[in-house]
Length: 148
Image 1 (cartoon, rainbow, N blue to C red):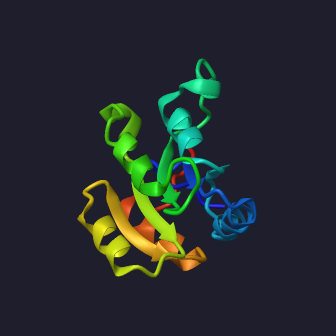
Image 2 (cartoon, rainbow, N blue to C red; image 1 turned 120 degrees about the vertical axis):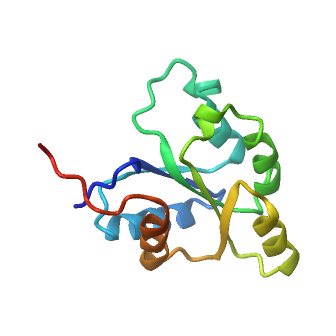
């Protein structure tokens, strides 16, 4: 298992529980030593990031470095999440790479995602290990940390 500097946690936001389970397994197969937090609603994810709602007063074990965000979810979709995400404090957003991970084939969704300065890229489901490793190599110091 490799520990990556500044990447302690990956946050999966998708209303489909089986998809979250599969994507969690994909991340685990990379061999990276990171926590994977899978949430089934965008609203809960905002509470998790801001330590509000059921997460208020709870000590967060790890701050997400990567968020994989679905677009089409009930209640609050991925675009609404991004609008609310932009209102979070800089410390709540620091070092977070947001990836739209969706089944949407809409060119307008992809164009919108790529125009948003808070969204790094747009991927089609399913998540694959090489996608995770590409992101880690691009956005984090991918040399494993050594313990002293």
